[in-house]
Amino acid sequence: MPITKPSAADVRFALALTLGGAVGFASLAAAQISPTVPDQKTPPSARAGIEAESDAAMERLRGAIARRQTQPQDAPSELPQPTEAERRRAFEALRSRAPSPAIEARARDAMEAGKDRFAAERAAMAKRLEQALGLEAPDIKAVAEAAPAPAAQSWVPVLFASSSMPTATLRTYAAQLEKARGVIAFRGMPGGMTKVAPMAKLTAEILRLDPGCEGPACAMRDVQLIVDPLVFRQHGVTRVPALAMIPSDPVLPYCEREDESPRAAHVVYGDAALSGLLEEIARLGGKEEVRDAQSRLESR
Image (cartoon, rainbow, N blue to C red):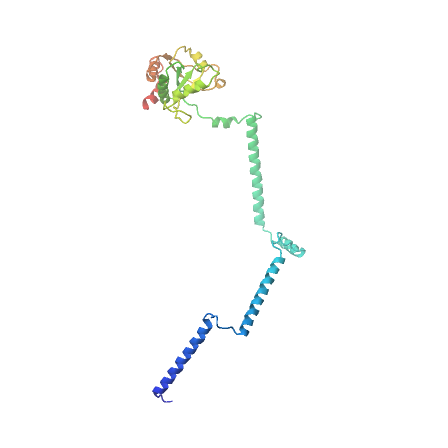
């Protein structure tokens, strides 16, 4: 068919149709989506359909509420019980399980090993308990192996003092004995043996690093103070201050000491520095006794 050029009249006619259809479609869409104005009225058939749909929705809601009220509120607390047939099938499945000899052998071995270990631990605990209660003699070999090797003999510098001495002098001796790892010995306690508070106060005044500090949080010197009238009697000390190098532990309780505990070979007297008292003992023949104390005193 040959292509012909449209005439101007045909073009105007087609444009009029196009514009008319667009205007009509826009008017119809505006009528459908525009809000309802007061003076427009809904057709009776549309109103009846809307009312019927709303009534049906309300009826469905009332039915759901009624069914919810008649149903139990809490879920069942017990699990459903299996039937006899289900229980029988479960036990038959367990019995029909293929055994594994390797797993059973490992389980038996582990059980036997556990029994052996438990029996050994129980026997060891019973033996230690009997030894602790004195019902059985201890293992001499084990005790000998556990005992520490005998240490070389050492001497402890013991300063014989009294509460009547000036506190400043006692504090000076405490600072020197801390370096030499010595002990301060008193014959008795101020106020008598029945009163502990005065001795505790004197001890704090002697050992306190800061003399102005008060309370239990104050730092103290690492020096031991003992009240021992026996050590005074053994060494015949009648006046203080005095120094002796005792070849045993002077702070042991009375019940742990031997009847004839070792005594110092020399006792020196005089209100002198600790270094001077040690030199006097060395001059009297106790060079070996004072060697360790002098080295500690000079190294700090």
